[in-house]
Amino acid sequence: MIQQINAKYQKSAVVDVRSGDTVKVHQKIREGSKERVQIFQGLVIRTDMKGGHLSRITVRRIASGVGVEKSFLLHSPLVMQVEVTKRSKVRRNYLSYMRQRTGKAARLTGLDFDKRGVNEIHDAAAEAEEAKLKEQVAADAAAKAEEKEAEQAKLDAKADAVAAKHQETA
Image (cartoon, rainbow, N blue to C red):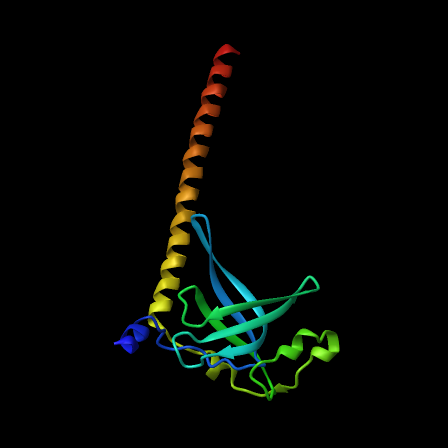
């Protein structure tokens, strides 16, 4: 029974992310009534509960000279996409030692891997939601443009009326 409930909230396919990977996480951010997609790029220093519906990755990056770590639930509806950009050779699951390293000391040895094979995942529900979000943004932009056009038409009509009155008096 519990497994059925967990399976209901699990995404059909998730990118195979490992410790030592450099990833771009596309996360949906809601600010008031607006939604946007924010990209967080960094090094995966930890993977937890791989294969389960609570699978989590911890991503670390340096922002303005300060180390920032964020944890992402891979099956969360707020995580739109995880893209692996670089794969490195590591021998641990939890790379806590990377917190003390900066500059050249923080480099990891890169590995060759099939980027397209790792990153291509077709999740129909997520693609439909992304298309719906794009459609909504386009509709909002069209409504704004239409509103602006109507306002401009009013201003043009007012200007024409003023010009006609000016010619009558002249």
